[in-house]
Image (tube, rainbow, N blue to C red):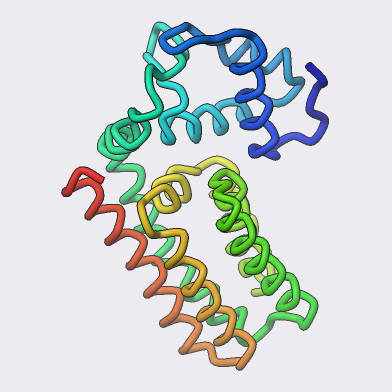
Length: 233
């Protein structure tokens, strides 16, 4: 298989792994390649492979048994059950993720409303369009990357280097929040409207409105995740 040259494009890693499953003859229940083997075969970082495997596990394509390895899921019908299990196992990091973002992101949105350059606003608009397009294609991995990119560009537009580095680090190493939110039923569609509301406030140079829109966006996402945990998806 051709090696992937751009590190951290997790949607490419996911596509490559799914292609391996199909082309290398893996069946339901089979043990899959290890993270170390995938890293070597795809020529990407171990963190890229780990993120891709986390997303595939959350969507029920594979299951990870600690100390044993990665296995191909038994049935397509297991996808929602796998996601519910993944939510419960990651409840604490997911909650902590949103607690931190509720401290940071609303203020970032307010600063962006004051300081964003026209080209940064244009980029946010493009990412919103990309998000909607990938949502229509039902490409959840690409949607997750668009969501991360929206928040990363917004952080960069604050002109606060520390905040930008912090947000970039969160998107690169703490993917649980994005995975849990955008795999929750109905959340992708809600996010499209919520991102547009944030963007509109930034375009109107309305810091308070941007803060409120961002706070609502994060609180809604966390509420939907908790409902999925409580109600079984």
